[in-house]
Structures are given as structure tokens and as C-alpha cells.
Image 1 (cartoon, rainbow, N blue to C red):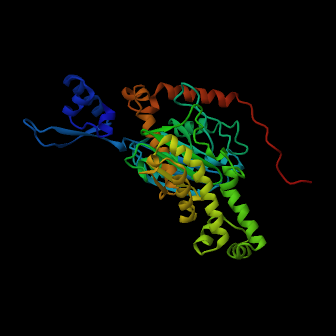
Image 2: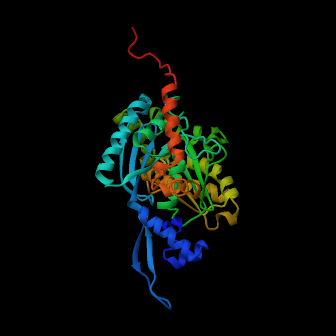
Image 3: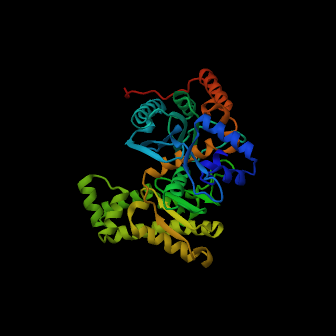
Length: 419
């Protein structure tokens, strides 16, 4: 009943009776429960059709708040959304995650408190979406779990997710960064209204998120989409088209003089960035044009078999490498269209993401919204009024407290300077 109202599939008692196939008395009783819990409210009258005008009911998305966070190797982003997953505010800043988990956890708690004070109103936190680099393994049969965050140095063994859930007193759902970016594009970006799409993150690592028939495909261990490990001529895709590979080639070209533009950038700034190759290509630098063309063709050659397999209606390219300009985008399109079946490419669009850093936050919030109102999880808290009262979450907090108190401290390398 709640999901029918929340998604807009049914907004009157008559529609709810028809869609749910429940009797009038049951529908009336459950609507009264949802009204009492504050999850829905009565709205305006609809047009009368052969009798009394029906009164609409609607979901109250500001009944609770969802917090979202995206951790990357050198940045931290936080956001706050309502229960529909609509982002209300966001904040981005640079951070050194290699310094260890404790300062990051405290900074995250500070930013969350600030966002709630500014934009949360009187609503309580109902869930947190956390996006991290790399694959997030999922255990069988557990909806609430704390995966090990192995992508960051000195983080392995630290109970980051458990302590975050304890600090905010709300369930935490963890996904890989590319999966949350995929959900963000699907719900608020170029994928609105579509059911089959591929999102590709081109950066330090290269990975893909797949949506099939409206559902995010995570794989058996949660590691679906690791296309950067695909072998092509010259190595795997990341070693050929990842941002570190591009920067390495660009610096060599600057030092050798093969790229006059990059040589000038290196002399002026002391370093060369991925964005510099894009600027050079736009200004007609032959090396930069060739480098981005080769990168785009390599990505397209890996994506073409996926397009043939999955038949998506949209492929979205994101990440700092994708932001270098149209030359890379054109090379990806050329390779995919040339190596895919004509039926697959007939209506296929390949575009660059316009959401930037917002995609991961929007997607993290959407992951939480879908998890909160999944019927299997919903039935555990709906009569209690809040997912914070869910027995599985209470058990998670108890396990977290026990694990934190009994887990031995992990030895750290000695600090300080060498004598």
C-alpha cells in the first residue's frame, strides 16, 4: 500500500483497491495506519466519476531524512535528501583518506551534523548511503552488513561502517562508487525514464554500472562491472586508458617535446593533469588529439561486447577522463557503433554525464530509499514507525558494539622521521 502511494501508482482509495486487490475495509484500515504513522497525508479532491469525488493521498517525503556520502581517494562529498531520494543540499571538499579512517569518520560526522542543522528540519535520520571505491562484497542473506573498506590504505580492519551507524543511529547501506553514480544517472540524469543503461566511470580506475529492466545488477559478490581489468592490446584497459596512464604519457610527451602545449603546461605548473590533455586537444595539439582518440577507441572496444550482450538504450561516460572533451566521446562512439550489431546500435545513445559529482550522492540516496521501502525490509519496521526501530538494525548495532569492543587493535607502521 505504501509503495503504491509512494511511487504514484495509486493515489485514491479506489485505485488502491484495484492495484492491491484488497477489499475496501482492509484498504481503509491500512490507510488509517499510514496516516497515523505520518507516512502519508490526504490531499486534494479528484474529479468525480459517477459519484462522490475521490480524495487523493500522497506520500510525505519529509517525514525522514536520508544522508549520503561519497568517499574517493582524494575527496569527500556529503548530501542530504528526503525519503524520495531527492537531493536537498550537497557539499564537496578535498580530503586525504590515506591518513586513516578516524579523522575521516569525525569529519563525516561534523559535516552530517551541519547539513542536518541547515536542511534537515525536525525530521530524523532514516538511513545513510555510503559510496566507496572498488567492489563492495555482499554476504548472502544479510540486508544490513558492514563490508571491509579495502580500497584505502590503513583502513582494513577498522569498523568504519559500524561506527558510522552508531554515530548517526541509523542503518547504513554501502555500495561501490560506480554503482551509486549509475543510480544517480538513472534517476536524475540522462537515464530518466529508461530501464536499460550502462554507466562507465573513466578515472584512476575504470568500471561500469549496469541497469537491466530497471534493476541495478550487482553480481554474485557485488563486483559486477570491473571492466578495467579487461585485457586489450597493450595491457588491461586501466593501464591503457585510466587517468594515471594518460598523465604518464602526457608528461613523457611534455618532457620530450612531442607536445608543445603540454611542454608549456609542465614548465608553467610543474605538472600535467588529465584536464590539460583535453585543453590541448581543443587547441589542436596533435599529441593530445591522438592520445584521447586512442583512449576512446580502447574504451569503445571493451564496451562493444557489453552492448551486444545487454542491448542498452543508453551508455553514459563519467569521471575525469570523460570530461576531457568530444574527441574521446567520438572515439568511444565510433568503436562501439563499428563493433556492435546494427540492431543494438540503431537507437543506442552514448553521451557524457552532465551530473558531475552529484551523481554519486543522488545515487547513494536512491539506494537507501529503495532499501528502506523494499517490502521485505519494510514489513520489519512499518508498524514501529521508523526503520531505526527495525529488529535487524538493533541486532546490527549490538553486533557492532561487540565487535568493536573485542576486536584487537591492528598494528600500524611507526610514524615520525628517520633518525
